[in-house]
Image 1 (cartoon, rainbow, N blue to C red):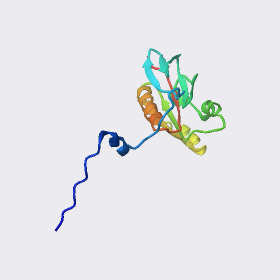
Image 2: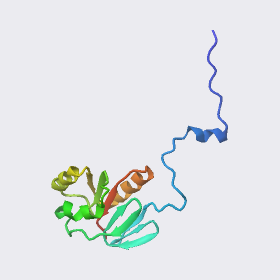
Image 3: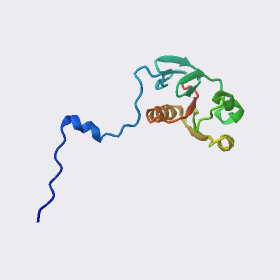
Image 4: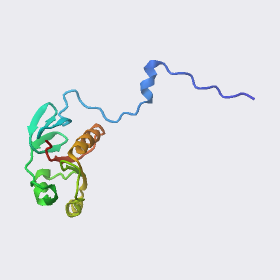
Length: 145
């Protein structure tokens, strides 16, 4: 009885054919990636922003949210989304979240937007992962000292 032959090893030039391409970006991409935070500012795609920010995949803007994240309402957010609501809104509330923000979550869900509430450092890391996957989202980041 003949046994099947093991597959032949691939040459180094064939090795990349086993990779699953997640997403490729142009060299001059304007994709907004968060490179640093702290000292009440953020470094995003080579630019420094003082204070809280609202980050879209291709644009970042200074954001003036309510002083207490738990008082944030949908009316504070919808004007910043324009006509194209993101499927996901990540809210970085500074330190560890103390409020699940159920009212805001329900109001956003009514518009087809899921809410994820986390610390600002966690939101920054999550944002970069989502952007590397080509996901559509927006993040609102309260500044951290």
